[in-house]
Length: 320
Image (cartoon, rainbow, N blue to C red):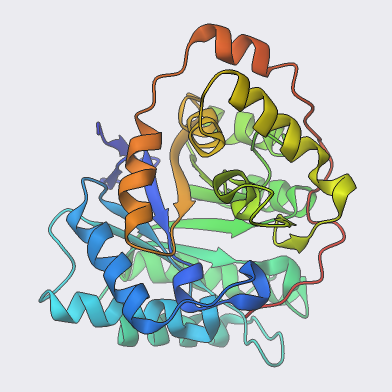
């Protein structure tokens, strides 16, 4: 895989990144559990693959994702050479506090459990769920602390990772971010991040597009997973999913491959973050990433229905 640069920084990443939120054991979000052994085996498979990019967060599984990754890093004697680990500063999960001191504490927690002395790519995460946006964006707030961390050399690049585009775009325009992570907003089912991706691409902000499978349903199938963007789905919510599945069946293409390639073929997107929760999914994802789909497939795929509304507008956020 030819690597791509993160903004103006020296960091170079593969066009595919493995997401590890499910490896923190988050049954409220995904509908299934992931034990330690399965998580460790998956992380080892990621490190053994041709992908050099992994994304996690301080709050995934209340810290379990980072802890499990850190255990494998220690087992291997350190982060593999040339590997880019992305993690995130997170609010206090009990109080919602997200001031500068909480941002610094979140960093220190990550460095400790990951067994690292610096973070290659560090994002500020989910400000829309914090108790006070002004605590984050105001003078002396968490965002100032994020850029101070970069100045101190504790992060090589910094980004913004969140959901709501209406809140995210003004913040992106106000700070010199190297990257952004948007999830569930640019998929075969939804295009709500399209304009924001234009802005980021035009301003040399690396676009990291997460959750191309709409929370997993396009990878696992609507028959197995009745959740869309982490929300339990009724038949009405599953209609567009089944339309994608029917279209892919006509072309003898795995819906997961189509969903992943949809993101990876977009020239604005630096890397696509695809979650995996078991070791065999690593090889499957790599196979999907290299699936060659015809121009005719993509031409007709444009007729598939896609929403421009926020896909998580009615989501009841559960961190576990």
